[in-house]
Length: 318
Image (cartoon, rainbow, N blue to C red; front, side, top):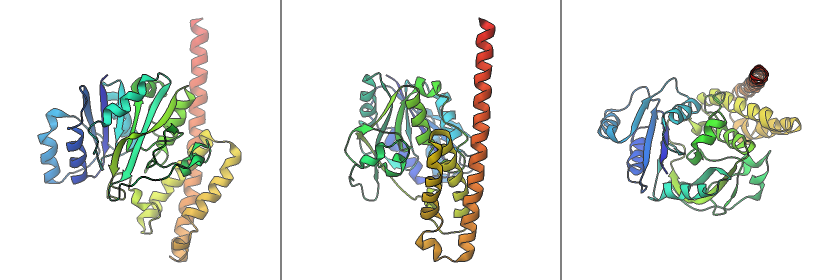
């Protein structure tokens, strides 16, 4: 079975080179590496490395930067039956990583496999939280360091695979998740499950992730306090509201907003930053909430139009 490793990258340098060097040494008889590069300008060293491996990878330039669009671009170029998504800031200590993902697909009911992701600075195992199984709140309790095989509602974009035909059937990644694209993996897993497939967590395929490194989705802003974090948080709130409206019961929206407000607007460290900081973070949440609602309305409108078009086509052919 051919496997396509898809590596979206944005503003990574040495870490990207390390990730690709590791990927090129994996043990599997038939695989390709698809790099979707959104970086405007690399360092001389990175350019030299990418040139040296160009004949061993599928290299695509992509813009404007968007992790959701980059994954879809990689999916369209991939030729494998299984798509393995990797972040551009991971190390791959297990040379059998691909095989451990593929073994799961002997079960035809499985559409996706989430692998283990350990902190590269301290690669330690963690506990399993049974609350992660909840369809509404499981995202907030999901971890990728434990050793318990289970079904999941979300997955780590740093180490997750899917059947290519399943990804195509559900329409790939929803590109309405913008900026940091927070929770795009959750949305994708829920749509794969809605299509009748299982998504499982297998702790055997493991990567080491460099959390907080510059570049990528700039997730260093999560709990950040510099001025740039407000713009990042606007997209964070937008994406959270959008997925809640898209997949969750309406009654869960108010508790979600309250949870986000307590954790990401009025927590202790932010309060100590002063009134100007709090005002900016409140504006970010308000704007993100409104954007999330508008995005959901646009998605709903497009969905209704698609269904109407399908019915019309069916009636015409009949």
